[in-house]
Length: 228
Ligand SMILES: *[C@@H]1O[C@H](CO)[C@@H](O)[C@H](O)[C@H]1NC(C)=O
Ligand SMILES: *[C@@H]1O[C@H](CO)[C@@H](O)[C@H](O)[C@H]1NC(C)=O
Ligand SMILES: *[C@@H]1O[C@H](CO)[C@@H](O)[C@H](O)[C@H]1NC(C)=O
Image 1 (cartoon, rainbow, N blue to C red):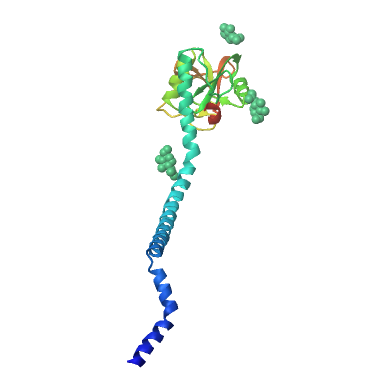
Image 2 (image 1 turned 135 degrees about the vertical axis):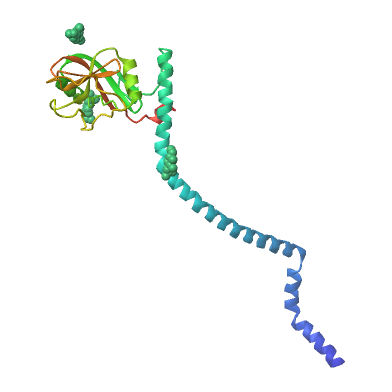
């Protein structure tokens, strides 16, 4: 018994430091702290994984969106501008900062239209537009046809011509006009190889006749920052 007692005593003595730490670890404060730390760690790991997964998909999404973003913004600005322009035309005097076209040019669709009152031959008109960094009109939709009709009551040259009576009519860029938009009014006789617009219709005539003209050029980018 003595021996055993002594052994027990010794044993206890030997384990005393260990017991101390067990004592500390089992103190409620440390347990709570450890639990909190563990919870934090696990939470942090879960959070990081979730964040990584989210940012991966988000980034993907943003990259796809970004390709479209400036285009979307531009389209929005354009629609906004056309709304403002319409408004200011109805109540003349209302001002806005939309200026995708130079002064005296009209904004419609994606283009600026210039209506000029000079009596020029077709070739002279073509050159006049080129000097304006523009081209004679190419009318490729019913909308544009209606727009021009509503804008001017004069005979005006358009960018439609043919080399001679046996050739097809072509726009300045070489394309052939679509029959869906308009049919040339009359086939035109010999040497009637240039076309003018009048009241929604397009007629062949002599290239050396002198008429008013209209030019077209791409609208500049609507400057969104000047709008807002
Ligand atoms: C870009 O936007 C158009 C609509 O404006 C949409 O149909 C198209 O899917 C978009 N493209 C990308 C790559 O997001
Ligand atoms: C152009 O010619 C027409 C007919 O010849 C004439 O009535 C008109 O005044 C002229 N316009 C200009 C700006 O010279
Ligand atoms: C045409 O473009 C040139 C070069 O960009 C420019 O210097 C010139 O002022 C423009 N002319 C007109 C009439 O806009």
